[in-house]
Length: 543
Image (cartoon, rainbow, N blue to C red; front, side, top):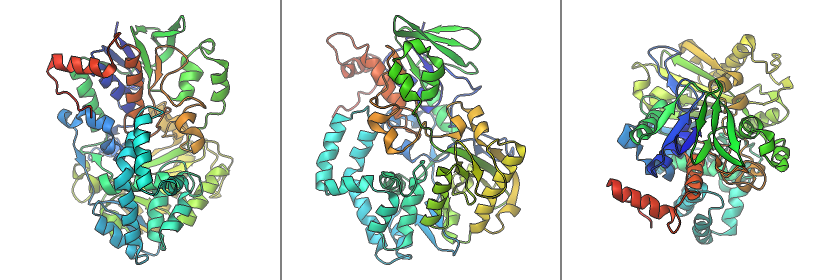
């Protein structure tokens, strides 16, 4: 009998399992899909000569995460690749805002829109350099992050205090207007804000857009060399080197509860898997509280609050094998790993408004990935492995594009929407469609079939809007991985701090489980340090 059972072998589940194994626990991970990774996987299904990521591709949160840094995954084969530039946002008239790890290049790009905007970007980055590390510490530690918040508050006083706090909660449209006279800086902030399900006018979208932009400036948007699954492979190798067990192709149907405590799980084929100390669930919030647990084990308030849980936008993705580089009108876009496709902030607002009205957007804002530009091993020389994804409503009542899309996502609708995405690319790269050797369409139901956590193609485990963050995540008054069932911990992106590949929800759940089993008279840190001394492992810094 293992000490812990982890449901789900996505990045959060694997991080949780690794940390438990580091503390000396025996761990068994049970995964529904035939392979681990969740939304961090790649394959060669589009074209055998091309590596295409199935879901996520670029990982600024991973390389900035102290959680993943502590796992030292480079010792288990993980390598990162960077495109020559981080991100480009071209316009139909040929102008282009460029985010580059060299801040002088970014500033020069923004000055081309309006002289002086390069200095405005430098000022935003100077603020990030003062407060960024403490923001990341607060983001990646369990809620409430008391010590990290205290340090951040002290830093904020030096960075303008309440004025800085105001900046973080601004809508990104307003933040861009306050900071930049020209359109370039506004495009970079707003496009990055729409990586989440936040409209340019949504409160907090300015803080999120600034965070993602500064991560790109400081860390880039790197991709695992060889495919996104290389990150998963490193996590699995590390876990197995510490005695962890991974079982794929087995769906957990029920969490077994006795006397108010989680004591294991039961798989769909009826097999029980007992857990001596804890069960950690890297599953969506509705799956945990709506199907894996019997209703009698939950307080009535949890069931009531679950009805108010809000998913993030659905996702529609197209993968391509291209016979040559993308013919962007804007030269700068040709060297960027990520390209944002919307002809201005107003078009981003229009896109978000159509989703809010439950319409399929007619001009979908697309995030475009140039993977061979980022990692040359992804496809033969002179070609490009590429993808684009856009968002659509979870519930569709109309089609702003007048093609009759209803959200059934049958073969006809998938092809119509993929064509619409390609037309959006063509607006900024005429001749793009002539380069297509093969394509794969991943509609919302397909994404969910490949990873049950991606309900309707939702990729963030629930909305990023303020009403479902911090102590409102996943449900009002929670904010922590503990659940109403003793020994059961939520370890997915549904928990604080939410979506993105950074491992924090898994780490928070593992630490919560370990705290429940610290021997009398010893702190959790003392126990881990004692074990590392016995094994000869390097003692971590506690400063």
